[in-house]
Image (tube, rainbow, N blue to C red; front, top):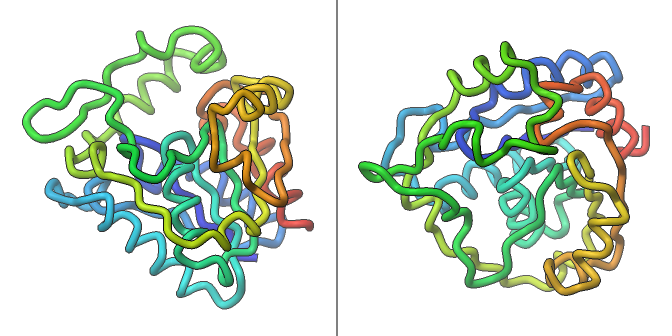
Length: 227
């Protein structure tokens, strides 16, 4: 199965370099995406531009792909299900929940010179980054790319309720499946609360399992495909 891999904020397709060979060895075709404005030099990119890139990859897949969104890109994966409900086999959300219709995509940190730079590791101390050694932190930080303001502040638009019939799996890294269920039951993710087919998978890692647990993450994703 084609597995489309969308990294979260500040990261391009190279974030999946350690996961790709593992998925390939398991018989899948991983497709890591480098989004407009996050690796291609398009500093003026918008959220719509990024979604178009994801949809192009969905449309190019020979069958129905698994669309994987990490962190904030969970919203992009869910937007793909909204735009292509009949084409997406499943959605996997790693360490993130989709934003609701009308919300900003990811306006989490300060904008500087038209972009949102990586804020350093301080905001992520604790469970998020506890499993990242200094070498891995340095490698990830050096690869970060400021997110264009029009992406970070882009408004999410969801239009097709058939998205709720697309199977969704929440991959739980720095939090547990029990916590995720509690948050959704408490109303923190109205979109996932309406999902018809919702499952949870635990992975013993921090927020960036593609860097700290690539083999384990590949196995989790392969299991989600059903093979």
